[in-house]
Length: 68
Image 1: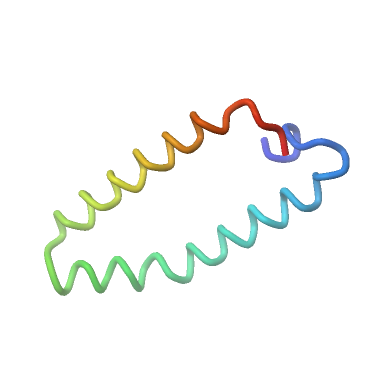
Image 2: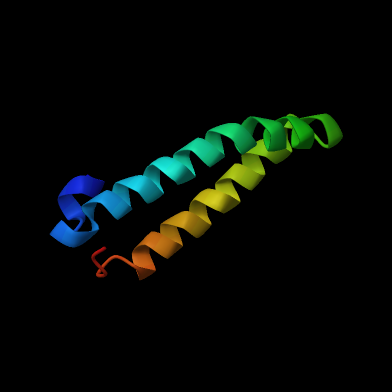
């Protein structure tokens, strides 16, 4: 999807950014999730995930017309 949406000049940059963000999230996500779970509760992990999801959906909605 990223490859299809990107302009010809930005295809490599778009895929590189996607892969970088994915790798960082795979490294940091379990650590942060475990910290939240051990200091608060399992419910808090789900609440924070929901808040982040709503934020990301809003950001996608705001940037929906820009092409990278």
